[in-house]
Amino acid sequence: MQAVTVTPKFVFGVNGQLNNSLHIHEEKKLVYVAGHNVIVYDLEEGTQQFIPGSANADEINYIAMSPSGRLVALCERAQPRSQVTIFDVPTRQRKKTLPEFEMENLPFECKEFLSCAFSPVDEKHNLVTLCGEGDWCVIMWQWDTFKMLSKFDLNVVSPSETKTFQISMAQIMQDQVIVVTGSKTFSYLKLEENMRSIVQVHGELDTRQASDEYTCHTWAKDSVQLVIGTAEGEILVANMRGEFVICVPTSPFG
Image 1: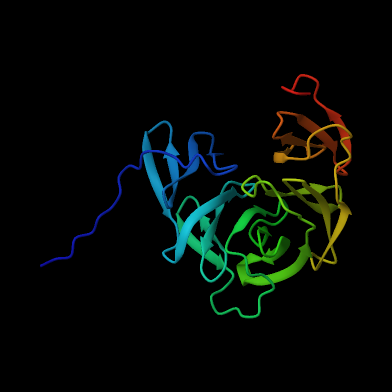
Image 2 (image 1 turned 135 degrees about the horizontal axis):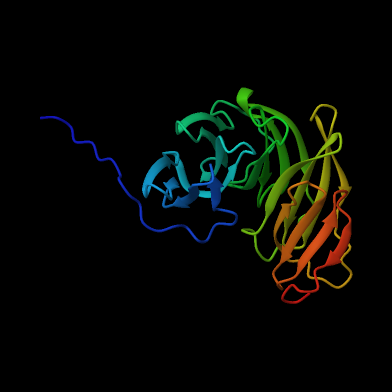
């Protein structure tokens, strides 16, 4: 008797609890999380392709697209520690899973990476991850060789929410910078010594009156401005050096 193979044809629904979980690919496809899968939905054809989560993981808690859109990274809650898996989007082939299973004495123990981001300069090699409760640190990886390049400990104290934490990377002039936002947390970091060192430039955003419950952020297309949202509905703007400029007057509570 032949074995029966079940292949999904269409997955209904979306995980709306995840932060930053909807992406546009090739201008006609949506990439999002449903169940324990990343769905690549073709808007013109009405068809889906599937990138499955890892068998040893409990759930997908964050996804990030590379600048070119060719790669997607899946942060997964797993045992004994968090992991992130990189896939090639067009072929849906797994490239690497970090950390490598055999790696020992790693400087983190958290069960999930809250967020991750590809390098804007070299997405085929470099990725940054944000460790959550138990560690609260930033780790820079050379992901194609499983190497951990550098680590920076964040000063996170009693956050009211962990799902809103986000990390990003940007190329500012000759520097690559990392920004972390979340509950009562803003950190503007710079990579030095060929990514072997992470230095904090700003540890807070001096907004004077605005809320420090940051829920999301994004870089303007030219990376000249950083736009940050708060739980109170404020839209804050910082310059490319991570310095507060203005609270947009027309934002809900601006």
